[in-house]
Image (cartoon, rainbow, N blue to C red):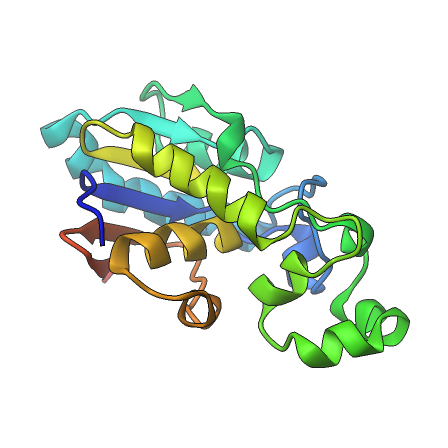
Length: 193
């Protein structure tokens, strides 16, 4: 397990496609009203951290992460980093999980975890390439940093920091509206209330 700077990780708020179990990957879908509220909760959780620590902030270029960052970070400056984009899910992008199960029954049956399903998508990025992007981001961090990205991206990030294997990463929860705090090989979760 490597030693990384402290990370505050935010998954984007719920999107229209999240709500209907449609695979986004690197396609775009706007935040729902719930997703906007989740980003507002994250803003409340982050405000004292941003004020006290003044950390750099890195954000995925995809619209849902940008929208979340604009709410959660307010006027705080951030840098957009293409390495933070969600996994590219090839033929699965734009399909619902039910449509994938119908069109690709063997892959669907073999991959009950969403991370594995995305990484087995025909024409997709695959696990090793995707995890390599996350690892490259981690290796470039020099100081405590806020990262706003995506659920599967965050599972791999959190797994690498906490020394988990792929199957353990795939079983991690993917909460929205919270802040994952990663430090010294461990994870804590900041929630409202």
